[in-house]
Length: 513
Image 1 (cartoon, rainbow, N blue to C red):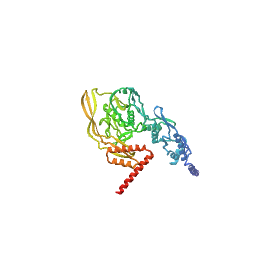
Image 2: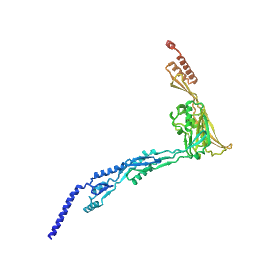
Image 3: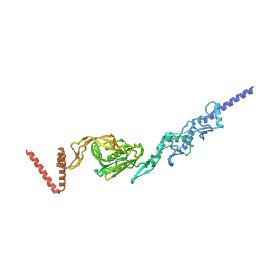
Image 4: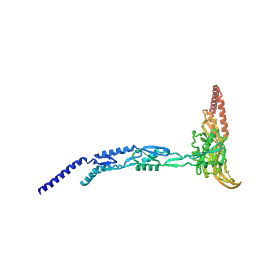
């Protein structure tokens, strides 16, 4: 009996010693990861939490340098790194779990966990993820270079014959779909090494085929206007605008904007300073005369019976077409001339200038009845004669300078479309209504002079508000200036002395009275 009691006490003391020393040993390693713990194949045994975090971070950073090639059309590509695509370590709490493994629960639970580690080990998955905003930024920032605009097949007319230039397929990166495709590849199929993925490309097929375009050979409408009275710079503007419109191919349903075709109004784009209408006045501006281009085209479009969607009359009447047959364009006021190809076939616009005449011919596929005839008739509803000429003093011009702008009669008019079939009128409808301002003639008179006598004379003439008096006075002053320029200095001095003496005598006589 005594031996049994002694054995029990010994066992209790042994167990107590074991627990005591075991506790001391565990205390020394309680902040380190147990043997047999790995993460993504990285051995974390014996590491502190900070050391394990650094080891995994180094692993992830190594993956960030992997190159991912983004493939576009025709072998084009761009290569970026996984880091640029927003690679990051997602489940960062795994290190804390690894540190706590085998150190929580009762002694039996802890013992079992340690035994499992000893025999089987424990591996944590390192979860990687990608920032989709970063992927989207790469797609929009670096892949737009692969965008290629579609080019429709076009017609060219040379030496009276048409030829076709084939179009080009267009491509553009679908940013949203490409971002999703890249993310899916990285999350599902990427092995952590260099790789590649296809971008999602939108494909735009060009319009027009050779067999379709070569059907375009019928004249739908043609119109010509003259600019024979225009100066050199205005003539250049008309010719330049015609050149910019010439050769246009317009497909069914497409809209043509004259302004878009001829802009910008700059010297680099072939324009010069010339007269144009602004607020009821004729002023010089870059591209002055371009409205004759839009007006000539307007009449060709009307005869082709295409759909006009925007047209504006000028502020004042023009002299190269009848009232209401004009079409103004103006950058400052947003005026444009637009029309739609409302036929079922492409049309071709040919522009031509020769002998100070501008012509537009519109070619297409004629589907109208051969007996159909279309014409346009201008009707003046009201006419306003200009008022008395305006006299404007201009101190920036020398005395003797005279410049006259022509008067403009005011009109209220409308344009009729008349349709005949086999010579019989079948319809008549109003196409547009137009109002043109009346503007009197303006006489600009120079007043700049250092001679008080000339200044007095011209100001007195202006005060009469009589154009004839102003013109005669200006002419006399100019003649006197010309004569004075031919005199010698001695003669000029004598004349000045005589004028001074006359002025003094007049002052003395006035004082005597």
